[in-house]
Image (cartoon, rainbow, N blue to C red; front, side, top):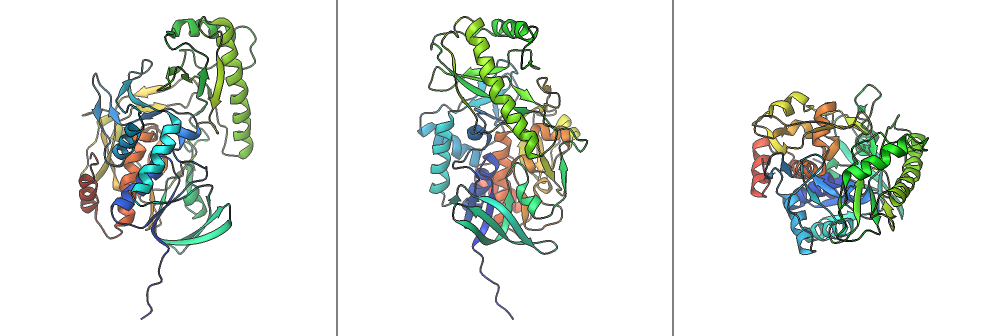
Length: 419
């Protein structure tokens, strides 16, 4: 009888956003030798690469915040707290949802620290380029990095890339957007400096300034008419402003190039409008847009179960649930005009394990915004707080290939996850 060939890792996780961090922590804390691969030179996903400076999904809606995510997510919040960040719930004035405000530089450092402290190997500046598989099993992946291409094998893999890059190269069928050539709009959050610390930002003054801008033959007409979502960046007097949405026509590089160029130009123009027309912004300047636009939606690889809008509307509970979806269905199909539909029942719905399992490959798991979900349910589960939870469950499952859902749930609850 031939000996089983040794693998390089027990679990390899592709993608270093919230889902990937959760997966790597879940796998490593369950005892697996774990590698996390990330294309940027830092971790954090949208929080650090797109200026989305808020963790959504950690709390349910309501007059008071109620935790919906723990476990690996709490490890990250604890690491942020050590760095001086406040992980307490903050109620968004615009939506009434509870979020956690972020300083992106502290997020980068906190994620480095918590992953290394838990024994996770990290490869930055590295992408998944190819996968070797049989009918229902991935044997290895090829990584493209600064030192060329390397091939690594593992017992199990987690796709937490957001764009389903691992599933794509593994040959799994992927739905694009809602399956009808429509994608949730991309976003362009920005950071604005030059404001006095005690200056009170007045929403209606901003709304009026851009109403006048829109009617004056402007270059970049705004589709959002409520002044956007804004807060102060923790530890500074800077303003974080989510005002820019842009439609994505398809998943081609040319479409994303067009969106990036548009958003940069629009961001500079909108800050100029504030500077010239809104009292208190006379010295305002654009500090930063993200290294890339905020991609809300791209590919959805085939899973064994797609969470449905009705699951969210009814707050469906399940014996095979491994995470809570507590963020409302926040649909950005119409750029600048988000529609929120609350979670029913007790304020959360269970995400079942089969949403995290690839349909045709036994050792591939999904985390974050690539898990199985229909278009409206996806509008709930895509946020970063929920991604920590689905990521942790995917990592635990990948580290325990012969475990049933009850065993996975037990491991999660022992680690502090909220199920």
